[in-house]
Amino acid sequence: MLLRLTPWLTLVALFAATHVLSQDLTLRQRLETAAFRASLPAIPVLPLTRTQLTVTPPMALIGVSAVAADKAGNIYTIHRPTDPKADPIVVVDSRGRFLRSWGKGAFAIPHGIKVDAAGNVWAVDAHTSKVFKFTPAGRLLLEISVGDIPNPAAAFCGATDVAFGRSGHIFVSDGYCNGRVVEYDAGGRKLRQWGARGTGPGEFENAHSIAIGADGVLYVADRENDRLQWFDQDGRFLGQKAFGGKVFSVAIGPAGQLYVGLQPAGAPNGTDSVVLRVDRRSGRILGRVAAFGHQLSVAPDGALLPGPRADTPAVLLFRPHP
Image (cartoon, rainbow, N blue to C red; front, side, top):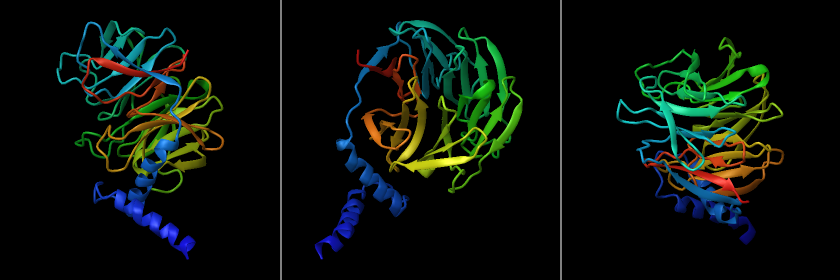
């Protein structure tokens, strides 16, 4: 009798533990979130050193959305300054010393930033749905207008992130309104798109982040559907995994490490957030760090860059232990 009752008692306990969450959440989300929070203590902490670099000279970084790094250790931050005279892209060296900045007037809602293998800097605007390619010095090389914005009056209704595939092809997650992935050639010519709004395999409620492994597998953080999905580069669905919370971001490290940024459903942004390392083959969770991975990237030296949304003159990163 006790064995029969245990699953129901567990469900009741998990449900009770979620009473502080939004009443708009479904029962499934509340149960999954409670289970996710309960499982965290058993997940080992990753062997990474939390480092907070103070930008020198100090400058306000307002609403940091994403962070990336190049092979020289320089760090590129994209944030949302309230001062129209301030640049949204700020570059510091590995010690936090200011090097340069650019981008004023080019962005409505700065969102994603990545550095490609050649050292070029890519940035995404979540309102205008534009993707920009810059040199490391900030010279514009390419501008892609993703287009097809269902509601131009909405603040967030455009693209979210960018990843780089075979033959120099560019993959853009167009997540906030369209729920799709769009592929371009190296010159910015649109080749194809796939995905739609929905909850089924290959559909997205919000394709919020995108990454491509060395084996060509493409991962998409389907944020509002609380899952990670993966595909081949032709858009064929290969699999999915739920973690019990919103999957904000995904990134692949230089040694093939898979990271996902999670947050409990219904929690304010940045609350109880965690970045997990996941085994790409088995789906087993290998470790965690406490950080809000709104967007994620991994530096060439293996440092994890979670891109916290915080108003601070500092940049957060997690460096591998020596």
